[in-house]
Image (tube, rainbow, N blue to C red):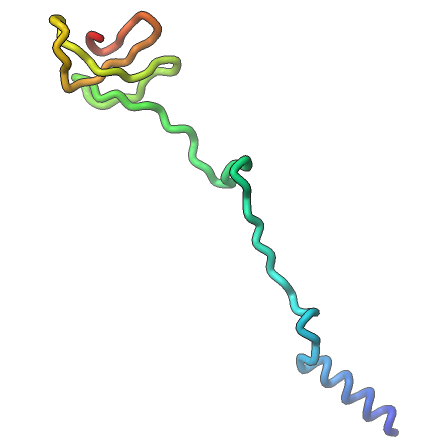
Length: 91
């Protein structure tokens, strides 16, 4: 009879949370390193040139540069430089 009571006491203790702390579920955070891309990263943003026609994306293979007037004075607008060619103004 005592064995039955002690077995019932042990099972009751287990059911009521008598688990040791080491048996608890542990949550692990996975830290990503710099070399790993973000799981929901943004697509690469295009370079923007603010030209006389408005701010527009620079075409692939080109870059934005400061625009100049025909006499060489800097303007407040950008131009897109593609190799030896400029788009949207003078360089």
